[in-house]
Image 1 (cartoon, rainbow, N blue to C red):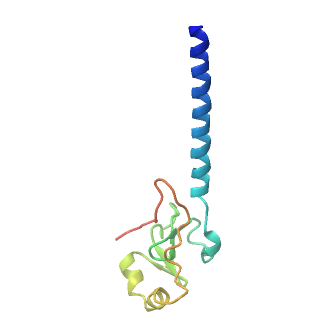
Image 2 (cartoon, rainbow, N blue to C red; image 1 turned 45 degrees about the vertical axis):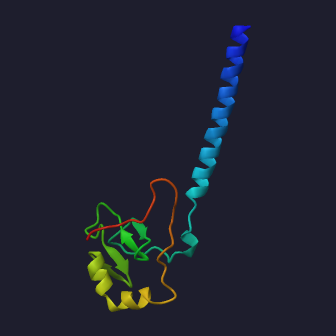
Image 3 (cartoon, rainbow, N blue to C red; image 1 turned 30 degrees about the vertical axis):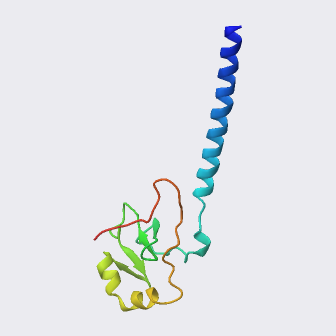
Length: 120
């Protein structure tokens, strides 16, 4: 009789844990959904093969470990080695003040996500 109760408890615990795991995975996958359809296309530049979207700046940043441009922002066909140089660009200032500014578009969400931030 005691063994039956223990087996029953273990069975119920497994069902509860399976439900919790399924729910967590479902929300995790939903939270990692991409809004990349709203983003401008990734740059096609032979100097960088890996790009990350910087949500705060609304531009792509090079994340290619083998590139001399790693950590640089890219806008209007030009690399900017830090936020300050990007912000000084008149073309970027016009873009940032326009209705076409794409800042605020996160490519993923959930635990541990956020904007990619490079350099000072």
